[in-house]
Length: 67
Image: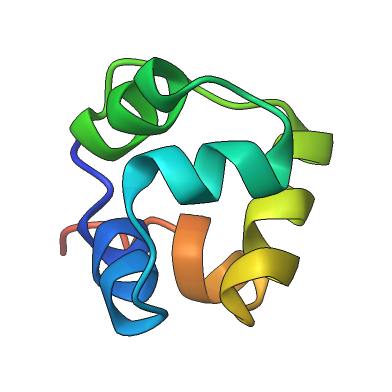
């Protein structure tokens, strides 16, 4: 599942994938894979991304179940 919420939050903060990667200590490819839904980040990385994007874990990583 694509992480559109993370991508939108990144764009709202006017950050490129490269800039977010630098701020969180990972590669641009890692950020791209998270946004594409091809990589599940560690909890520590999720927290770092949330702090950088000024969002909560729920806002960026909670998946709503289809009813």
